[in-house]
Figure 1 (tube, one colour):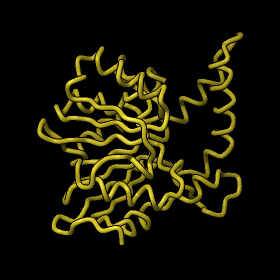
Figure 2 (tube, rainbow, N blue to C red; figure 1 turned 90 degrees about the vertical axis):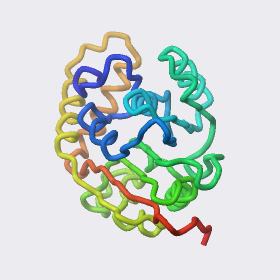
Figure 3 (cartoon, rainbow, N blue to C red; figure 1 turned 180 degrees about the horizontal axis):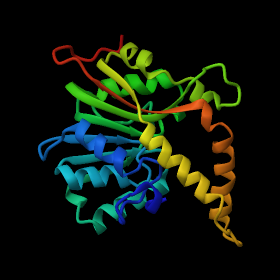
Amino acid sequence: MRRVLGLPPDLQSTSLLGEAGLDEVVSALDLCAERTLADLACGRGGYGLEIARRSGCRVVGIDFSVVAIEQAQRRARELGLADRADFRVGELTATGLSTASVDAVLIVDSIQFAEPLPDALRECRRIVRPGGRVIVTCWEALDADDERLSPRLRQLDLARQLPRAGFVDVEVTDKPVWRRAEHALWREALTVEISDDPALRSMQEEGQRVLATFDGLRRVLATARAPRAVPWSPT
């Protein structure tokens, strides 16, 4: 995954966002040392820690997995970023963060797991400060009625859903370069001799499932901003 997606050697990825995508995300977030990023569904913290290292920002990572959070905390110490990284157990719909407490929110390839999705987007709106950015990477169905696809993916329509959650300046952009890299990853995974490695076997099984419906998905980057002068309201 690291080789095909072009990821930095010490980034512990839990998604398929490659180097090209990471560069675009960092640019879109436009963070600096005085800012705080909330990395939701952060997994082992790889992307948030890399963004903190590149920009100098502080990162608060949230994930439902206690094991992943422990790994992220350990990785922050190994990278010398423990003073700028805070990882906590929480949910996409209930982060535990204070209202208007972060300057930006990032969700990498995980928004489809939110239950319910509108609540997760409203939670993003709640925790981000006025004028703050929200960046979401995900896949969307080309046809919401395509029953080959997971209902989780078929529910995504961020161009409509982000404004409903209170965001402005919403842009949802196709990313064919990202998509081609992911296709190459899955194709190559199927050629690897797995022997008795259960992780490789699982990856090949996932690759077969993904490639069977790959033509029904588009890869997207969604960006949005909280209104500058409008405080968050639960209504």
